[in-house]
Image (cartoon, rainbow, N blue to C red; front, side, top):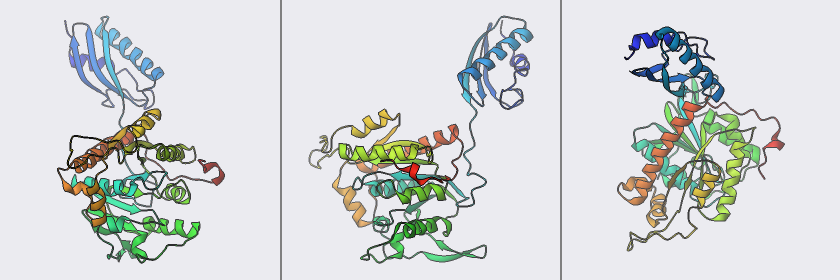
Length: 374
């Protein structure tokens, strides 16, 4: 004896979703119904899959199935959360057409954060996404060089009667950097408020249009620029870049701690290990762990974070950056494959974050003293 799907749905129509106050059938939360004898299985989505909610819903399903079908049934129910829409918050008037804003941070300088950010941006563009990049390293901007647009100047554009900045585009990536507004040999000597105001303008006075991902290359450390960022735009998530060596991991730990502060609370979706190992061209099967082995992997596991990738230490990565042609464009090389795999993992983790969590809102920080991670 097996039960018909319509009879099972009729019984489940008496089960009310605890938060949404409507029955699970009306809300279209039941799927993949199967019946073998008195064993019934199906998938069920609920708003809050906490243990007490699961138990409450399962008991309701069992009671109404037994009652309506007039039989003692055995249930196998796969309960999952109702997917959340990954939309930009409606109250966000800055960057309204940008779906995901990803901060790339390191804590320590010299770990290749800008190289990783540039290659991630190009990899995402290669996969067909609309990508923007903000070089937020006010004092050491490097993106114009890495994208071979040092001589470019952002042009003004009129949008709805307002004069705005049009980002420079290269390799399918829209970008803005303070480097476009200062001479190459000119030192940028600004006090904190001037630097943060310049960063804010890259978001508020630029016409970015529709983007799937906006990447923000943050400066080293955990200071004013980082706080200004989370106060200006709703950062979807952050990624921490580090090399495997202990001195870099100390600062990476601080960067993770900064984003987890209650006042900031930006999800860290994973870590990327740069300069993970060295493989000489003449010994392609050999790996030499110059900066240590699996240091980033261990730190990621300690914080229950995914390791998003391992980028090898290859001379051509540095040469590609200096030449203004990111290494990911070298297609079949190990480093290009590593960057493309990294991009795939970022896409997956951003999607998982958006499904499980509400969209991020701008941070309102009133007590700056509570934001120190030292």
